[in-house]
Length: 363
Ligand code: XIL
Image (cartoon, rainbow, N blue to C red):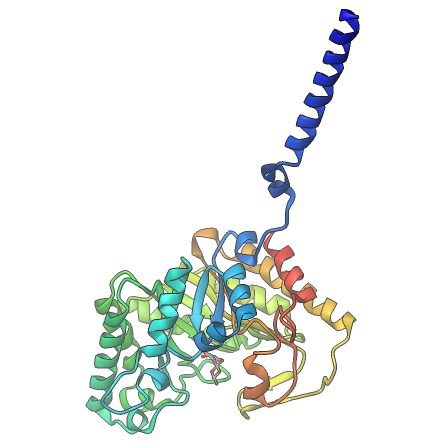
C-alpha cells in the first residue's frame, strides 16, 4: 500500500513538473520572442517617424493609437511652418507647434522640426520683404523659433526645397531673389547659434527620379560645407510613384550617404498615379485599386526599406518618416486633386499589405 502511495505521489509529482514546464513554455517571455513587433518602430533599428496634424491626433482615438504604436519620431505636417507660425505680421503663434512638441515628449518620441525656410504658401508680409529687410526677418525668425524650442527639437529642416522642381538649379524663391544663395548659409548659421545641439538638414524632393537634381543638391551641399556652413544632414522627401526606377532611388541614397552626413527619408509615400509638381496637379490614370496592385505596392515598400538599410551606413541612418500614414488623411488627394492610395494604412485605418511589406524590409 505504502509502495502504491509512493508511486502515486511520484507520478503526481511528475505530472506537476511536466505541467509546470508546459506552463513555463507559455510564459510571456517565451511568447514575446516569437511575437510580431507591436509597431514599425519595434521592427526597425533606426527611428521611424510619422508626420501628424496634432488636432486630428487629439480628436481621433484610433489615429492616436496608430501614432503611438508605430512611431518613435514625430514631424508636424504644417504647424511648424512659417505660414503657420508667422501667419500674422509682427507676431508669432506657437500654440499648435507647442502642443505637438508636448505630445511627442509625453510619448517619449523624438521631435523633428519642419521647416524653417520654405517658399511655399508664404504670407504676403514675408513674400514682399526686400533686400536687408528680408535678411533681418529671416535671422530674427529663425533665431526666435529655434530658441523657442531649444533642446526639445532633435533636428530641423532648416531649408526646404531650395532647388528648382526639376534639374539642379536654384529655385527663384523670394528668399533667393532678395539674397541669392547666401540666404541658405545665413539660415544654417542662425539655427546653429540658436540651438547648437539640434541637427540641421537640407530637405528636397524629386531625388528618386531626377538625377540632375541629385547632382545639383550634392554640389550645393558640397559648396555650403566648403564655406563652413554647419549642415548635419540631407533630407530626401521620397514622395514616390510606383513607376520610379528603384535603381535611381538606390544610387541617390548611395551618393547622398557618401557625403558622410545623416540621411533622413523625411516624407515617404508611394502613389499609383502621377504628381506633376510643375503644374501643381496630378494625372489620375488609376481610378481603382486591386488586390494585385496593393501587393505590388507592398513589394515596393519592402524594397525601399531594404535599400535604405543597404545604402545608408547605420551611424548615418537618421530614420524614415511617413508623410501621412493613412489613405484617409493623405495630403496627396487634396494637393494634387486626384484619388490615390499612397500610405501603409487604408481609409478605415487598417494596416495594408504595404504596411507588412515595409515591415519585412526593416527586418
Ligand atoms: C504638405 C502638407 O502635407 C499639406 O497639408 C500642405 O497643404 C502642403 O504641404 N513637401 C514638404 C511638405 O516639404 O511640407 C509638404 O507638406 C509636402 C511636400
